Amino acid sequence: MNNVVLVTGSTSGIGLGIAREFARAGYAVGFHGLEKDGADTASSIGRQYDVPICFTGHDLANEDGVAKLVHDTEQKLGAIDILVNNAGIQHVSSIAEFDPDKWNKIIEVNLSAAFRATKLVMPGMSKKKWGRIINIASVHGLVASEFKSAYVAAKHGLLGLTKVTALEGAPFGITANAICPGYADTPLVQKQITDQAKAHGISEDDVIEKVMLIKQPIKKFVKPESIGALCVFLASGHAELITGAAIPIDGGWSAQ
Image (cartoon, rainbow, N blue to C red):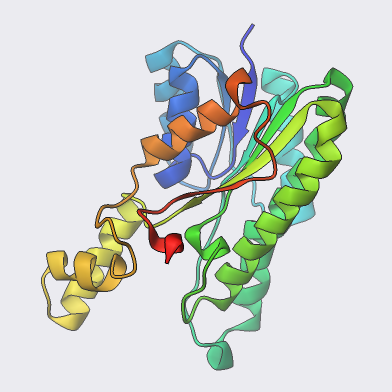
């Protein structure tokens, strides 16, 4: 019988890399996303690795959407053994000009949704005396950058939630950890590179080295599949004593 993993925001980018690695490892995967082709993406991976999958497209910016996500996944695949809180959104602005509605939505999706999903799955994990909760934070959960106040606040908060979850889950065989990636090689980031090159009149290589990876000693983007492989390890028996950790995968950015 396949263990069940739910990965939020998993039909593109980092989440897709995580979901794919769990499918490769033989897990039943609950996909979630807002992309129009999300169901097709999930079905394709299910067929490729011959594992059970399901797809839901609920909005995580409200409590009802998170509840439906967990309920629908459990109805289709069974009790959730591993929860990966990956879904996130971003908005760049100075604090003085930051739109309050955008602030609220970033906190809802990036932080409150993770709390709500964790709250819903922990009772079942506690009953089984086993569970894994993995929060995809960011290097911005460890350090700050200008013009990203809501995102940085949410990701710092996610690390705090991870630690509390680890302490409360410890008596019940539940571990909770956070992964803190730097810039990842995703279609969204590739679009940002192209847009910034045009906006500043510089080459895409200069955008990568002098804008995006300027704070990162190893000038390479994180591969989504590398984040996925780390998630699979944290879900394994080898990681049973790793809990409450914030694990950077950022090319040395947070070491400075």
